[in-house]
Length: 157
Image 1 (tube, rainbow, N blue to C red):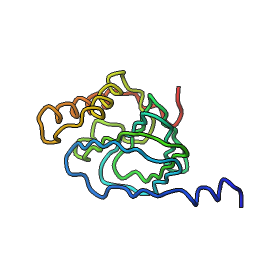
Image 2 (cartoon, rainbow, N blue to C red):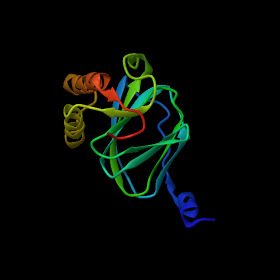
Image 3 (spheres, rainbow, N blue to C red):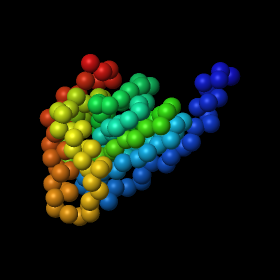
Image 4 (tube, rainbow, N blue to C red):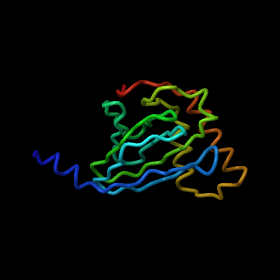
């Protein structure tokens, strides 16, 4: 067995969330090196953005790399798995399927405006009560920006 194949077996697995509590739900995760996200799918969309490091997301045997400042969009019910070989800090915006109609219906890298990384960083640096109107409004602006973003497939420009 190749050394790289052995190494993948040793990666730490982090379980996926089974449900989201709101229509828009934002989370930041600091994932240690050698973290595996087992294949899964869920009934909500997911926008993943790495602040540092590179996430590898596999969808239908296609690897998507998401270094800053790019993010990946996963529509509801998209089977995917992930891995990060080095430490990664990333944010995920979970989007209830009822809000996904205007978002791309296939997975891929989103070319976003500079406002998206700025909003994500603001949300990361300034944790707020998730029930505050101002917080919900920021998440809605983030969603509006993702709707306007260009989907470029599995490659980076």
